[in-house]
Image (cartoon, rainbow, N blue to C red; front, side, top):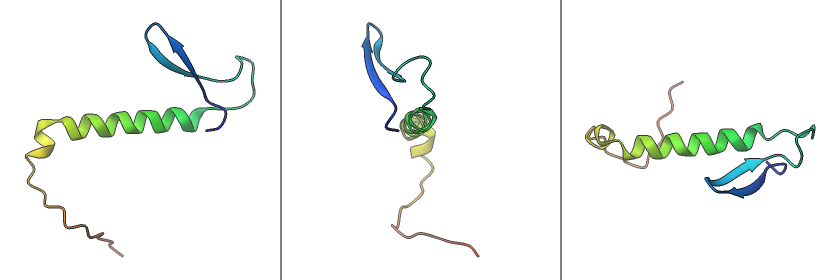
Length: 63
């Protein structure tokens, strides 16, 4: 996460490494960005809100 750098461009903000040949990885930062994007897409999907699922605030664990 700490190796990712923001870089503004004409298309928006990009995420990059310090240098192209840097051995440090930014895979976790990219995965987190993708996961957040997918979550926002799912929550914005109309069929997801029609499911009628009531949120009780309880965690169900099956053993």
